[in-house]
Length: 337
Image (cartoon, rainbow, N blue to C red; front, side):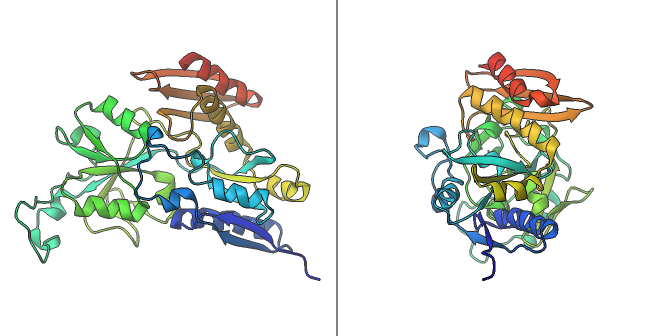
């Protein structure tokens, strides 16, 4: 009898599939004699595309991960692949985060309309014009947050992004937005009431989008006239685990554990361990108004973190030995709590 395939479960979004295919390809490269198959599972977050992402909106933790974890527990899958920033710090009993891929760029990106492109009505004129319809305006290429007009409207469903946007520009109007990456870009291209949105650079890169030196965003699903500017970490610190792909399995599955050991990027795992310990120490989930970024510098792990949990932004920074990743996160949580 042929050996049963190893089932890798994933969400069905384009980004989730891109990430899961990266993990599956690496599995097949390292273990060419084993069979790996993807299993697509729809999560609660996929079913609630129009719901608010606010913590007080009543949505459960594990919005994009719970159904994948149920598949692991029930033995319907062997490996679950997550955007690590979506994975709660408290995992269900019997499951474990055992590996992370090498981290991609952790920064966020401002997405907005190109003033030069939209200055020409022929580029965006609708077949049916309605009274009061606003003209689509934009900004020059390579604009930064300070270049947005007073009272500009930026769309994001992330409390972390909203808090940092308003710290940099208290005059901004920040509104909610849902949908996958192409959908959010299309909303910015079509809706005059939106001046921009914020997306993760890692997600854009994994979907094969590129940003050229002239500030233009390139890719198959990019609407015409869309520009992008990468935000400095001083302006927008990333979410815990941002840019990393997490691999979760049953904790007692020794065979799968040994396979996943080969997938793990040690430095990334230590960095996200510190960040997740910080988030756990702050008592928050993936929608909490906190941010953290750890990096390996020489023989040490250096981490900076911010919190808006008790009002205005509070910031802390520390460094420790790489093997003390969890202690580093706990230390910063203690300073900011």
